[in-house]
Length: 573
Image (cartoon, rainbow, N blue to C red; front, side, top):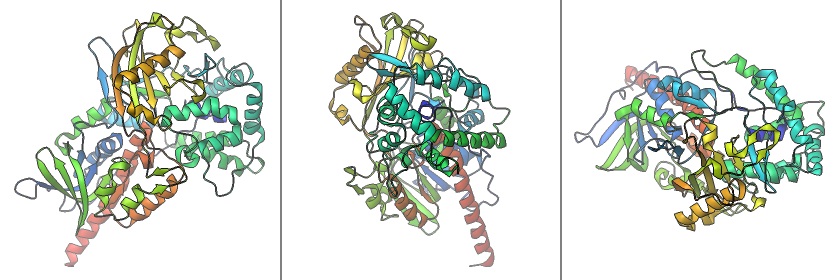
């Protein structure tokens, strides 16, 4: 379960329900199908759809288009699929990630695993283990159920040994004034949003639940998920599903002051109905919505399986330089290891990062440079910001962790009973958060070690980019010692350090108007879609779900275009 939703609404989980019918096979195929290597030297290929960018969004989209029978190519500038998803396994038994560590399980992920024949490699975390917040030298658990399903799970979440009531009445993370203020916003009401204002995450949370909940609960979450600054991130852009709960709260006629709890309850009822109307396939493995998941040997299992499926339909180390309009579609130009290549496509879907697009789109979308390099003086930004983040994986012997008993019966810290620990910016720990990888999934470390994935940097610590690797590791080790380790703990066993200079796109103030400008420019170019995680969501499940949903959009466009081409040919126009 997503702990942010627990914190904000006390009771409920709010992932989005999706329809998961596969894209229909094209009823009509044009002369584009099967046509390739139009030039004798093989420098030009012709396809129905060109997918640019082989991260999780692009690779899952390509998988779905291929299953629907679309003649397509997937072009990727790197020498592998997966983007920021890259897993490693060492000979001495460590499995670690360079980027994201897990996903919040959704039907789209379980389904694609089933389709690719890797569903037997799915692994899920213990649903009862909580995330922890470091505050005043202690670790505090956030509310979590015990893994029960349906009404039993909801009762556990509220009244269980680590439930909301225990958090509110006996927990030490919030002071009594902070708890009372949060309770008023949750159960009685709060001030309405300023009319016409694009609120930041800090403004929204503080208005509804109070400053203390923001500083000790939501601020570390935003740092951990977005590596972002909640004073510049737009609530409606970055956390749209949660922001919507306020609208639902005020829509309840009797809930005059918008108490957020009741809107959350109403949304939970909606979700229950949606899930019953669109249940998972009985052939899929069982799963719990929102539970952390991965694959036995890491998240790269998914893009690796897609690479195996698509084979020569994938073009690696193809860097796009230009997209132009043609009489019957588009022409894309690439720099490749064997020289310049062009692809003629009836449709193109770009999933590459926003900071790579302005010049590429300029010939076909003249407004693109203005959009992606738009000045945003209210937050002192140009375009969509991608801050630097480092993912540092280290291991320590279990015996080097503090020998302390954790609250609510979770046991000894040396066993790391939880999802991980988050560090509010007020605590003086530079590391944003630490995922307890060896506790989340089986087989991640030898039995006498604990494996930790640490994230450091982000939009409030851009100085990370100026540090050497040794300095970054020293900062991470310092943070681990402040929160988790004994004073005499040995130095870390460093398994990996990956610096992402342009990491997670920031959904900051002005993000939604910028996307509206992009949508308007895109509408003038049928068959061209400019997508990516800056538009459809940064989370792993968002990217996978995009792959399913947008394949339907592309397929519908191609079917219409092919019918029109056939009619035109028959009447001789």
